[in-house]
Length: 209
Length: 108
Image (cartoon, rainbow over all chains, first blue to last red; front, top):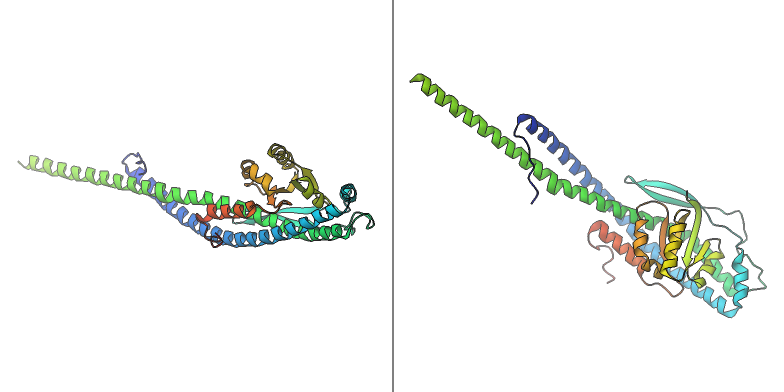
């Protein structure tokens, strides 16, 4: 049970509380709508996240197996040497997008000017390495997309939880407390008025005698 | 601030593959090493991919980075295959947001 609000039983206070109740219920409605919309969007992102993750996990496992295979058929030192100086450098353009007042990452891959995908000479390594590196480069786009969507999901989930706390605080604490306080004050004021009337009646009868 | 670069943290087999396509790679064998790496890389890199087994061990640290847009720390399966930690993360998000896992509970 929520703690009772201690207030002075005055008309001023009553007016103030009524204003506050109005504000609280309006805020509650707004936050509840916000929560609904955030959940709607979140479900979309979560589904996307799951789809991407499953794809990436499948493809990556594939590519890595290929890479391990490539490693096993050729000399380890040769592979290390082959990939030691990558021909490309991944470069990203970072931005933030606004999803329901949450600033989420927006990442785009900047086109690399280097066209050299394989940073080694084909004579030194086997074809398995070529194909595994080709798969991983193709995966890059998906990996970045996954990073963006998954982060969005994380952040939305946190924001939804926060928002729900606010809605609950308003719905189960703030609004009932204020309503109760308003009821108390009204009762006290009515009581004061009644006692005043009775007193006046008593005084009148005393005067009339 | 964050540059547009990608870092990969993982075991040696895995990181060689990523190095070839131009990501910056860092090897870590224990959770201590991984923790130190994440802390120092988080200031610089926008995306950090970390293998699931390492991510699982430093779970607490990773939750700290979830509130900001960058860096995005994303678990990926290692060369031994997936441990299911990544999908588990999505499930946890859904549970946090909706209260119950209404989207993916069919698979269980």
